Image 1 (cartoon, rainbow, N blue to C red):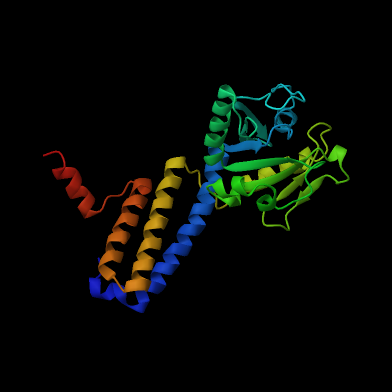
Image 2 (cartoon, one colour; image 1 turned 45 degrees about the horizontal axis):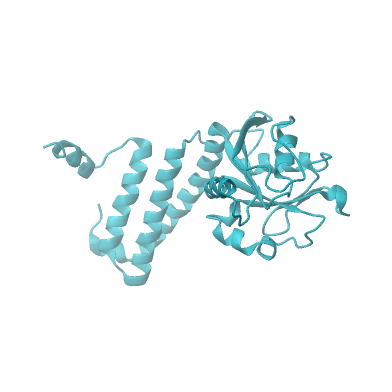
Length: 273
């Protein structure tokens, strides 16, 4: 290890930034590798009668879910497993999100939020025939604010067969927008293409890591430790605190590589006494 005094100079800040950038690149590649290996979880969410179950049926190409005009037909989580060009996809249909006095429906809504909060991708479905807005914050700010990561959101404008919108995908906005009709099938292929792209689909596997979820968790902890250390260094010139954060990052990365530092080894040796 370097001397603590040396940790506070400009060279360390430069090297630290380089390591942070490298970890970001590794995390992105590893994340795509994990999705390709284990499958991406896609949650279809929205208010009642937005067409969520119809979309599930369109994606699975079978009558997986019961579809009616009655709001609240789907009261529990429905799961289906499909492949898009060999890529595994876990599709999860959820109960319509609304305040309800019905005890059973309340449980369904709670379970829907559990799935939304841990999803790799959330498809927010809206009825294009009754909703003109295309910004999720304008459509449903409470929903967007509750999302753990808004970058994982895709807006799906359904029922274009009843509106004047053309099918397709729009990527010029902060949130991708898919226009489709789950009833007729128009635009569903655009959604499939979009899902493959966010999974990292490519004809080549160059630069891809066959990562597992626990590897991603370890990378996230290492990145968080480096971010904290950088803040300590920039804000307070606290080399001692940075050193601790570097050790935390090293330990997290060691869970992936299987390597142990001298301190780790001593802990393993004396931890059983």
